[in-house]
Image 1 (cartoon, rainbow, N blue to C red):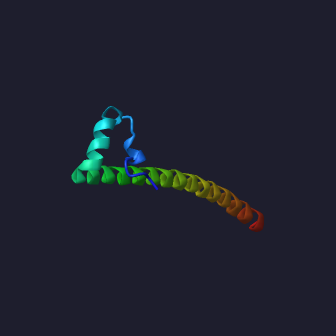
Image 2: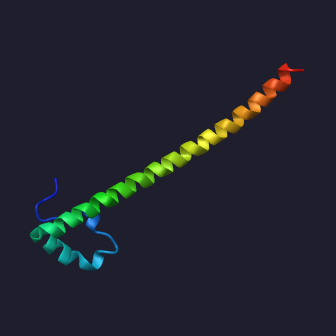
Image 3: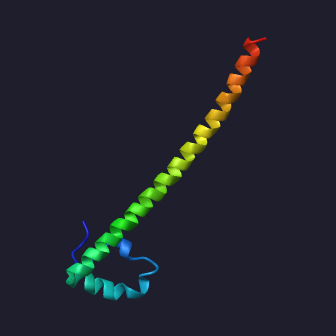
Amino acid sequence: MKDKMSIPEKLYSEKLSNYQESIKVLYLVDDDFKTMCDDYCCSKINVEKFKKKMQEDFHLKVEYENLTKELEEEIVQYIEKNME
């Protein structure tokens, strides 16, 4: 559980690093700003999640492509062997 005075970890980005003090103050006192920051954090989490999913999907795609090639070769070999 995060303590009451902290801001979400995702707000500690390189692009926002020059504004950390302002972010801390506004996050605690301005509900609109807090909502915007929370939306930003959710968006970053989703980007990371989909990035990971895309990497996993790419690896799966490569595995299936390789399996397809192997099976193609096996099919051709089987046909050649059994149709002589």
